[in-house]
Amino acid sequence: MRNGRIASLLAVGAVATFASAPVPSAASASSQSSAAEAPLLQYTQQKPQWQRCDAGSPATYQCMTLKVPLDYSDLGGRKIDIAVSRLRASSAKERRGVLLLNPGGPGGPGLDLPVAPDLDFPEEVKSHYDLIGFDPRGVGQSSPVSCGLTDDEQNFERPYRAGTFAKDVEWARTVADKCQAKGGDALRHLTTRNTARDMDVIRAVLGEKKISYLGFSYGTYLGAVYTQMFPQRTDRFVLDSATDPARIWRGMFQGMAEGTEPAFTRWSDWTARRHTTYELGDTPAEVRKTFWDLVAQADREPIDADGEPLTGDGIRAQHAAFFHVQDAAEWVAGLKKAAEDEKAAPSGTPERAPSPVPSAFARDVPSDNDAASAWAVLCADTRTWPRDPEQYRRDAIRDKARYPLYGDFAANIKPCAFWKQGSEPETTVNNKVGALILQNEWDPATPLAGGQAMHRALRGSRMVTVAGGEGHIVYGSNSCADKSRTVYLTTGRLPAKGLTCQTPGGQREKSR
Image 1 (cartoon, rainbow, N blue to C red):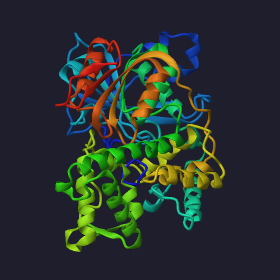
Image 2 (image 1 turned 180 degrees about the horizontal axis):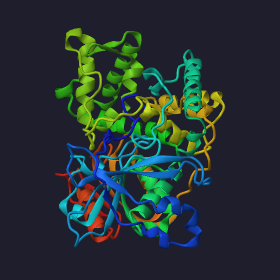
Image 3 (image 1 turned 60 degrees about the vertical axis):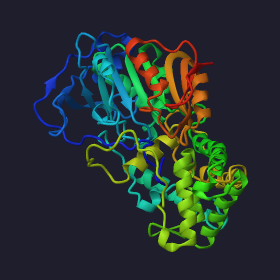
Image 4 (image 1 turned 90 degrees about the horizontal axis):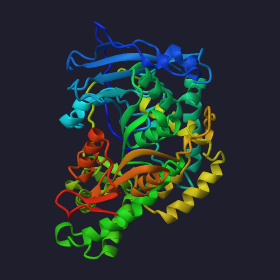
């Protein structure tokens, strides 16, 4: 989630254009599987028609479209498309199998991940695996869904205020109603469990007995669900920036609010020690007072930020900024200056670490596809969303007191209060499948506590924590986490114990 919009936690693009000249692949090996899988044979025995994805991309980067059932309990019913891409392993001799990739979200398209510049896989990984990207069901090129939402309806950053709560309830009801009117019964089947089933169809069509996997953010939950549903088909799984599998999905929002408070305390301490640079206060208490005075002032009269009025709620909505202490200090100092002098307006949004996967290709999909597909998963995945608006009101009041920066945003009403129930209950993740979990200490979207909970649920996993690591997504941190990932993917060796290491330039890594 970022910038007030439901979207992928990683900004990614997807290939939209398939060229001609199909290149047939080997037939699926799944036809040799047990008779229990026979009803799925019409899907698992599809012969992939690989085509060059895009004239501007490498010729070795190929795409295809598969058919999967919308409803896996009705295999003869409606079918939907799943767009899949492949970058073949660079060494036939060293090739181990396939590495499926997911960018997060939910709602994140992943078709172009095999060639995304910022992923920049080490050569030893590319020699071991065909890199496989795909757009999850309902996303991008995979039968994309739309609710016909306006820009304002896609904005989910709604703080609780007694005077506006009725409007928030109406917004949530409107989004749910518009999605139901446009998406109909299909929305019930846009779940993580069904995306995991789609992944297993991809595995079978590619002729693989097992798959390896690299998932970011929401993709960690998708990967964990796959390990629970298909443990015997799980090879080497890397989960980067994990969410708590037992808090799907309302708890994910609330976890962000919980994690923000210690990050804000850390920022206050860090900034106070640099008062001569930022002039925000020479004690943590003074720094906090300066910030909250700015919030109160902006509530009375918005602060001009790059020509855009920024309210106090608008400032609080940038809670993720405080996980990057230097960026946040510069931003708040700029706000303070702008409040004092309109000619010195700061940026309305603090600088953030760049997303690890930039958009590479334009997508011809509905403009609200990110939001529509995200809400479909968030609401249909679990049956634990409260149905009574007053429950959200009470929780928002409580959490605003507990977690002043973001608690009411996280607990306020969401469209899931009015969403039609998903096709099946959520998955309980609890297994001994081996996996590698990578986690920054200061992650605003999937806080450290969530990664630790994932580690406990996946009892065969090892966790690598980057102490002092800031921001969402570990990949590319040049820490022991990156090294552990490469070793695991290429050799299958997990760390003997959980590992904690400092950000580059910090102290030596240590086992725990």
